[in-house]
Every structure is written in C-alpha cells, then in structure tokens.
Length: 265
Image (tube, rainbow, N blue to C red; front, top):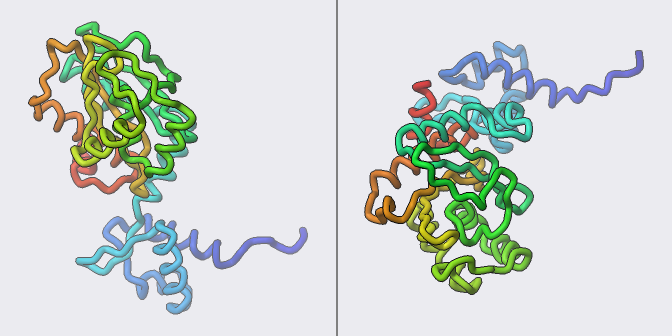
C-alpha cells in the first residue's frame, strides 16, 4: 500500500471526541491526556481547537469538557436526510392532539420558506392553499413571519426583492417597509400572528425554531377560524413556543425547556 494520507491531528481530535462521548459528566485535560496516551500539551491544543470549532464546550461550574450541541446537530442532520424526522412529526401531532388545530412545520432552506409537514387537526380548519412544498408569500402567513423575523435584515430585504409583497386579503400588509416593521415587532414578541392576512376568516400563530448555532431553522404554526382565535390567549401562545423550543433542542439549540421536554421521552 502507498503512504497513508491520514492527518494525525485530525485523527487525534476525533479520538478525543470518542473518549469524551463516553464520559457524559465531562473530562479534564489531564485525565484525557492519560486516557488517550497523548502529551498534555497536545491535548490542550486539540481541545482548544475543538472548543473554537464548537464541538466541545467547557462547563463553567465543574471546569470539565463535554461534547457540545453541535454534535447533536450533526447527528440529527444525518437522521433528517432531507425529510422531517419522526421526533419533530410527533411534536407537531402532540400539538394537534392538545389544541385540535392543524399544525404546520416550515424550514428556512436556501433562502426560501418551505412548508415541510402538515398535521391535520380534527376541527377541520386547514388552510387549503398551503401544502407541503409551498414556498410563496411568506410575508403573509405565520410560518413565514416567524422565520423571517429571525433572519438578518439584508437577507430579508433580498427575499423581498425575489418575492415582492403581494397582498392576499384586505388585512395584508402592502409595503416592504410595513412588513419589516411588523417583523421587528414579531421578533421582539417572540411569536408571529397572521390575523386574516393570508386567508380571510383564518388566523394563525407561529413560533421560530432554531438550530445549534442560534440561526433560524424554521417555524411551527397552527391555524384556526377567526371565531376561535383570541389574541389575548397567552396560554396557547406559550404552548406553541414551548413546543418550538422542544424542536429547537432536538436540532441542538441549547434551550433548557426543550432539553427537559425531549429528555422525558
């Protein structure tokens, strides 16, 4: 065989990740050095690199090193395989079971808001013009608002040039300036509202979903007829936000509520 092309430092770094993965309570560099049979100075350099790249983090109270949420993100991206994983589908179905309303999951994918999954509610109010794969008019519905409110301003403006606002009902915002102002309110509020902007007679509530690095992954939303919608119903809003946090935790975003939620599965 020819000369090995293995990069020693990369191989050692992966070795350290394997060892740390077997110690959920964390490790010290000294212990890691002895276990991996590597010089302690080498371990320090490797750990620093893994921390800088986001694969390892230092627990401040114990000063131990542990795997970071980026590892969970990589694992879940492998499971995703371009589709919505069963864990996320289960959470959307739990929303349906509790609220009886149709639930939607959308993803921010290649600068587009794309609906990925719909769980039908048993109160039979589904927005018929929304379907899996739909990617238009994101300024007008709760999924799009929850996502775009958490996208950098320049990207939203770019999205607006590609998808100029096209009002669908008398309640729709008509200018990009008004939409940008509404997105700022949405971001500060922490959830989105569609009050008959997409379809007359239908209102929606949405919440953002984040991934391991804090960037937006997508959103979850429910739809309901306007006679069941109550803008002051914070219990429903908080429940949707809580479920969005659970999905975010699944994707590696460090939310304590989401960790507790998925940890109980």
